[in-house]
Amino acid sequence: MIAAGVLALNPVAGHAALGDETLKPKTTDSDVQDLQALLKKKGYFTYHETTNYYGSYTTSAVKKLQEDKGLTKDGVAGNSVFKALGVFSKQAIVDEAKKYTGTPYQWGGETPDGFDCSGYLNYIFDRAANIDLPRTVKDIHKEGTAVDSPKVGDIVFFDINGNGELSHAGVYVGDGKFMHASSSKGVTTTDLDNSYWSPRYEGAKRYR
Image 1 (tube, rainbow, N blue to C red):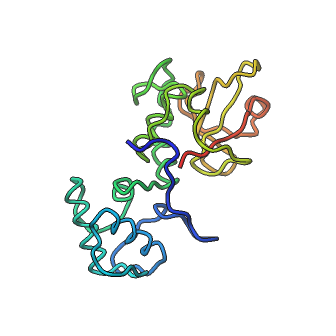
Image 2: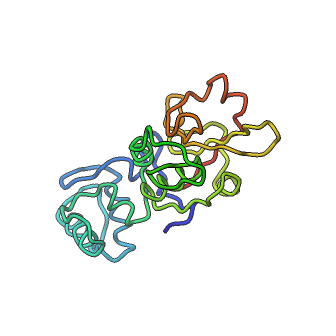
Image 3: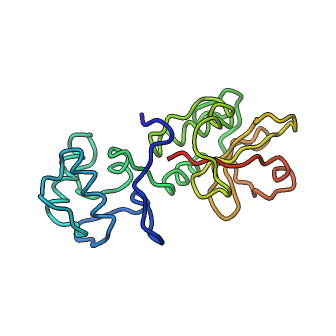
């Protein structure tokens, strides 16, 4: 597994990060060049230079990677290909998180049969991004990079008991909302400015 904190390639200003969008044959995009560079490092892309065009060389390289990793060999660079290259999509984390809406809360739970808050985060980050988070909220908070305001895919932290200790966490999914395993509702989506959660909010961290 990839340790928390591994960086995806940085996007240029105003452009989506590599891994946020599926890339297909005949696509022309700067992300294609980033994809080719990663494939080249892994020994799959052997053409002498990288370009913005997703042509036959890129398609062949992606198919070879897919074959080696036991993936569907279609030549399309989607989530599974990016994960194999160590890149993950923020949207993939959100999509994975939403799959378990309504899953009951279970103390110590870390499977779709039942989650506690950190077990839920561990499960979705592992499956969506191959990121191996620590098991407890406190230890998760020790890693990652602090951010002033959360963006999609960041983890938000809370001090429920008001004693200065972090005791709850969820994943920010955009539009002022986060998803978490609530002890009363199970996996649910909640507004960050909710009258209960807002005063208990203790910041956010980024894990990539």
